[in-house]
Length: 172
Image (tube, rainbow, N blue to C red; front, top):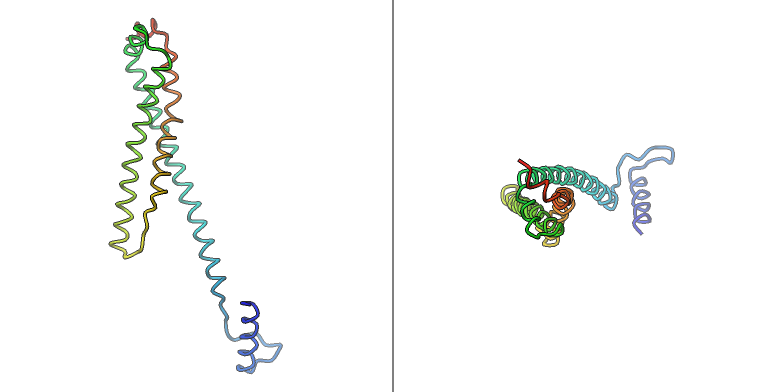
């Protein structure tokens, strides 16, 4: 019905403005549905841009976690060898290092979530914008932080679990 109403308004305005059929309109008709569609498309583009930035941030954070865990494995090689020599299985070492990586990433996730909530409230207060912090978004962010810890912590944990106890005890 919007198109029909728009056509009727156009005809009425052309008649009132005394425009001939060959003349262009000297007025504009705006359909709010088109404006809404344009705003939604802009919002989608902005969401994709923010998702790309977040993906790069997660990748960089994950690489940082992996590097920290690799350094930790290298520095604790003798400790790992000692634990394996007294009966720890590879699975135990793997679990220990995965827990450390997940803990590291969850601490970063909590800091990020806290900064996000604080930023949201600051924007609401200073810019007088209405913001909403969705609990599902917080849960999703926390889940992503754990997943990054598991994904990027697996290689160093597996490297630690695969050490030969005798070689590890000789490591200086």
